[in-house]
Picture 1: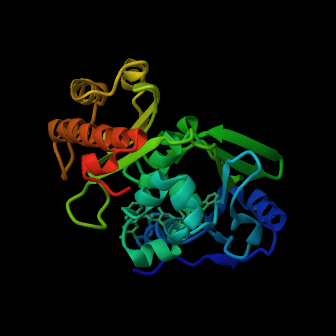
Picture 2: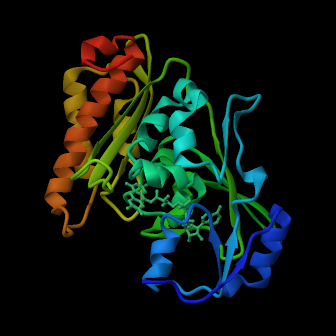
Picture 3: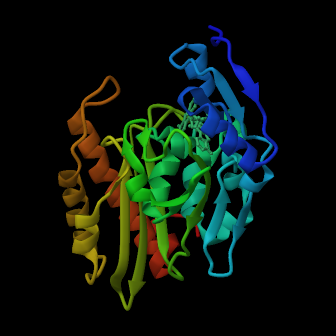
Length: 298
Ligand SMILES: Cc1cc2nc3c(=O)[nH]c(=O)nc-3n(C[C@H](O)[C@H](O)[C@H](O)COP(=O)(O)OP(=O)(O)OC[C@H]3O[C@@H](n4cnc5c(N)ncnc54)[C@H](O)[C@@H]3O)c2cc1C
């Protein structure tokens, strides 16, 4: 199918884009990579009168670490840029690993982090990464700026805190604790498909006990989830095999997925348990500096 007719605007500055969005707010859509928006237009599930193409806005294309060690990601950063960035691989390897699981290379070549976060698919990797990494999302409108903690940004399936007259401009990812271990585990029917479920972890060990634990899951609720109760139960404990098994069983209890055409709720709960166990083993081994023992790459 072809989309319904629309007007097309390609602003050359953020202010120009915000002004246009303010004027057409009830009937305009932002076009970034187009990988989610264009299918919706083609199926005529959306019929905006105006498309505001932000691909010319260079100020949304930054990828750098600031003086405080935070990663600054412009909203227009393509998935493939994150995937191939040496900076991301060195400082935030869990993000580099997760983005490789987003769709296929052709989609990662065009799709942007801003588009993925604003689309807010509950089975998308980058929203979960932002929740895991305690990221802050920066939005702008003609009225001013707002900053959203990632956990508050995602409000439901395909629903986020962004207003119709706002543009997501960038993301700020605070630095990880030095030497933190990490893992990302996903299950999907075929490589490149949306995940049925995924889990990711960040672990900091001090003198053999867990000093910091972050655990996130997706595909098992209306938004990506932080499993705070599981995290809190592990802090201060040695990360033994028994503690990992208990934490995985706990994670299973913490999620309340729904049955759909791809998987039953019970199967998704089973996946959360299995993926949590693997994540904690791998992240724990990386934090302890013994990745070879866990059979993972350094
Ligand atoms: C076949 C297929 C498989 C896919 N598989 C996966 C997958 O496994 N995992 C996954 O995570 N994703 C997957 N995707 C989605 C893909 O990652 C998209 O790139 C992403 O969801 C949207 O990014 P985009 O830049 O293309 O956004 P667009 O399609 O341009 O926009 C998406 C939405 O966000 C809004 N928007 C975009 N940028 C901004 C901004 N800066 N400020 C405000 N609003 C904005 C748009 O108005 C639109 O509503 C898949 C897509 C396809 C077609």
